[in-house]
Image 1 (cartoon, rainbow, N blue to C red):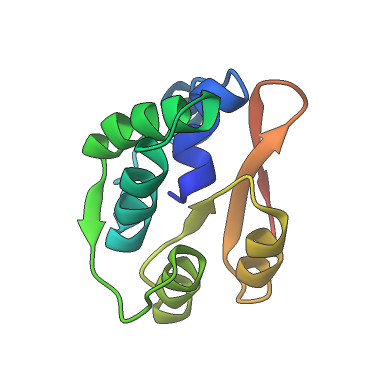
Image 2: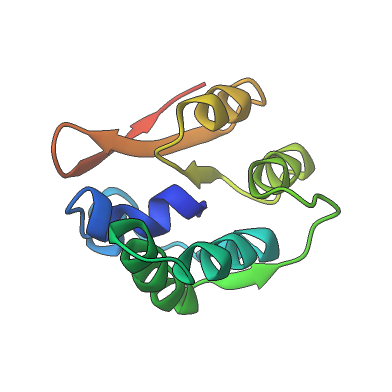
Length: 121
């Protein structure tokens, strides 16, 4: 789970975990520690982005937080993909989607207004 995915409920009106349950049977959710740090930083601001980050931080409690060598959230997700530590990356970030697909890992992202879909590499 990346930052944009955890912020989808506020920013895109997507019930992200309900959608993931619809797409996937049984899955363990993980997020890099750098995503948690990014959400914490964004949540200190004001406005919709800060609200979305605060909600995302609460939703991240459903995820196992994993450490990586990367200091940037997107790089951490790519590292997990490179290591084979994830079957999917959930993101609404186009450049990250391209990087992950280039590593033969499926991406789950927004399709239409409030549905998620799986993109194959």
